[in-house]
Image 1 (cartoon, rainbow, N blue to C red):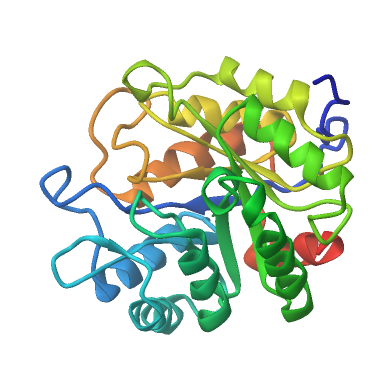
Image 2 (image 1 turned 180 degrees about the vertical axis):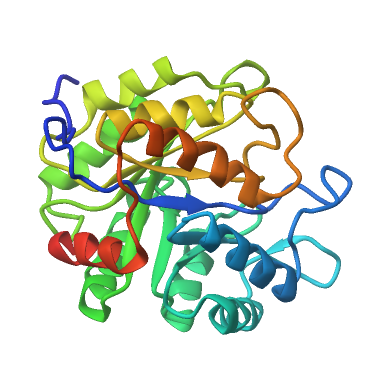
Length: 286
């Protein structure tokens, strides 16, 4: 399907770049990295250090008593309260609805409705696996807009983008545009992305979608982040998708991964967004 290119924000040197941290994900354990934050207290520590490195959003996964990914509203409330105790409202707290092959679309939707978070990420292919789930998805988005909950629709490839364009045409997205997350490298060999992977998304995204973010698997995460910022997008980094600094060393912390990006953006003269700036940008479209 041929569609117009996404609005890229080029020619606006004052556009601020929002940085999100994805500190843990649902799959990694402390065997992958001893500094992986899992408990509410560890997530709060991570939020505080990443805020100091100028991240303005934290993308949160919580675990059950055995350390497994879960969509438990009470565990989310505990984590959010801990993060707020350290970061206040200086970070947007975004929860994941990711299924990890365990949760149904109905359960994902139920989490958002019960928890009422400030923001939630939603993988299009998970929450709308087939046409039978389209109405529930549309109803969720219309409800989220009424409740002032910021969504972020996760897209993994061109097929996901084409479905989004079709849903937009049919009025299922509750607004003229919606925040997007492009995931680079999830289904590539060894899950290693590169900046050129961004081209497919930008070439096929709906024209005029102004709030988009990129996360990237693998050791070129920082390079992908810088390329994204130069093209007009926001960036997400963290242990969820990558453990390595640009030089190949294993990062000591999530904050180090944030700093690896902010230092490059500062050299390039790109200002960074605060949480309030990002809230204002999101409120303009949602």
